[in-house]
Length: 232
Image (cartoon, rainbow, N blue to C red; front, top):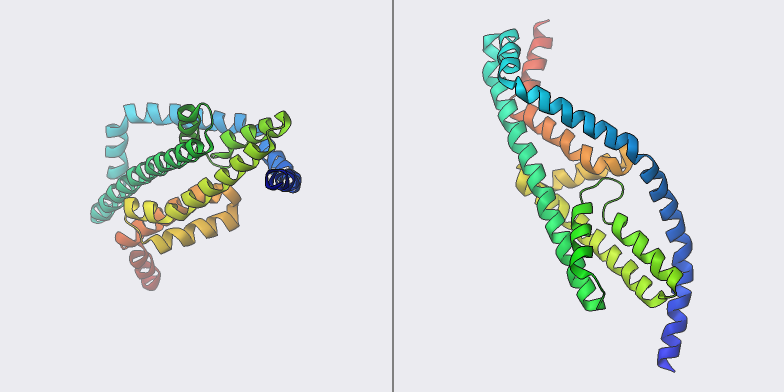
């Protein structure tokens, strides 16, 4: 009787969640539809970065020659800090992806699922992707199991999906803060403000804006601007 009762409640829970899951899936489909243009922009950016890197020293010397000598030290501080922060940001994303993969693997082991290593690896790799994230792996799996009649396993995957998202976003401010050298509370605020202003893309752009602001602050760029305004 207990098994029957559990099965009935699981099916009811699946029916309730399927509606919300469908809405989420529609949003995912729209995001996927926009991916080709985003991928094209990324490819163009990578090509441009490659060609710029070939003439990096020449471009750097020309750029420095255009800037007055008294600003060279501030510029050096800004460039060095931006470089370190960018490397730290990439390192943080790798750490978060590894944690995400491990949590997925542990959850799938508990659920006694198939293809545990492959699914965990794909989930970890998908973790840093804006909009989609681990949903790119979990949403198709959940729908497939719902259609196949594996309601209990689909609900279990949905719970695991929620756990993975909560853990990742809970650790994100601390991991980012430690690797880019900024207070975790400031990172959390940047993530929140970025999300409110730009949606899911704000989770990427928010910390980058914070990095740039922190770099300008270290170089005392704001003090220089206000000083010039006072002079004028």
